[in-house]
Length: 337
Image 1 (cartoon, rainbow, N blue to C red):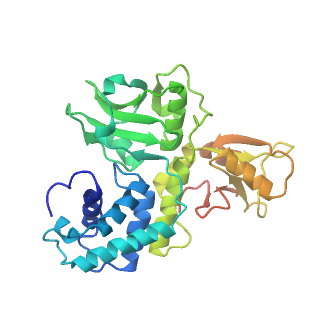
Image 2 (cartoon, rainbow, N blue to C red; image 1 turned 90 degrees about the vertical axis):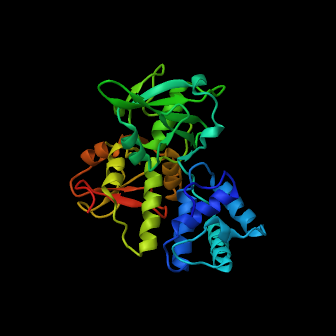
Image 3 (cartoon, one colour; image 1 turned 120 degrees about the vertical axis):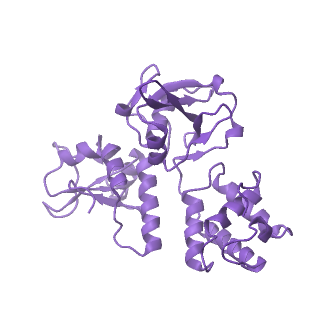
C-alpha cells in the first residue's frame, strides 16, 4: 500500500476503508457492521456521510480494479472479496438510516479561504493535543507550517481551531468563518455546545457569551459520545454499556434539562433512594418526554450541569440522560463503574 492516500474522491474513500481492515483475516459480517457504524458515527475526515455513501456507490459501479488501490496487502484479497465487502458496507449504511445528527464534521483544508478573513472568537486554554483528544480528531499541518483543524458545526457555522505558540505556553484559537447574520457570540455558543468545552476553558473574545445558549446548534457532544459508546458496546456484545471516564467527565460538564415540580424539586422515577432523575441534552427532548406522559400543561424545567445536578438530587439517586433513546445512560455520583 502506498505511503499516501489517493486524491480526494471515491478512490480515497475506498483506500481509507480498505486500509482500516488490511490486517483482518476475514471480511465477515462483524467487520461490515463495525465499518458501517464507523462511517455513520465517525466519518473519515474531509467527507460527509452522504459523500461516503455515494463514493462507495461510485466505486462499485466503476469498472476500475479496486484491488489496485491496495497493492501488496498484508492479507491477500481478490477483487470479488473487496467488492463484496464494499457492497455489504453500503447496504448496512443504508439500513442504519435515519442517521443520527453529528455534532460537527472535520472539513477539508482546501475548502477554506484565507484565515485572515476569519474572526478569532475564543482561545481554548488547552494545547492542540488536548483539544484533539477531546474531539477524537487530529490537527493537520497547514501551508504555513502550523497546525489546524477546520470544523463544520451542525449549526451550519464553520470554525477553524489553530494552534498558537507563546513563549510560556501553547493554546488553541477558535476562528469563525464570516457568515452573514451570525453574531460571533452565537457561533461561540454553538461551538461550545457541540464540542463539550465549557466557558471556564476559554477566553471569550466576543461581545459576551450567553452560557445557557446553544447558538442554534442541534445535538451536542454528550449525546454523540453516548451514541458512540452504545454502538461500541453493541458490537462487543456488552450489556449494560460501561461508561468511560472521559464520557463521565463530559457528562459532568454538560448542561442538562430537567422537569421541575411545583414545589422545589425535580421529577424522578423509581423507588426512593434508588431512583433516577430524567435529564435531557436538549430542551425539545424534555418537552417531547413530558408530552408523551400525557402532561397537557407546558412543563416547567430548569437546566444545570451534570455535576451540579448530582449535587442537587438526594443521596442514592442517579441521573438518566436522554431516556427513551437507544443510548439512554444512567450516571451516578460515584463515577463510572
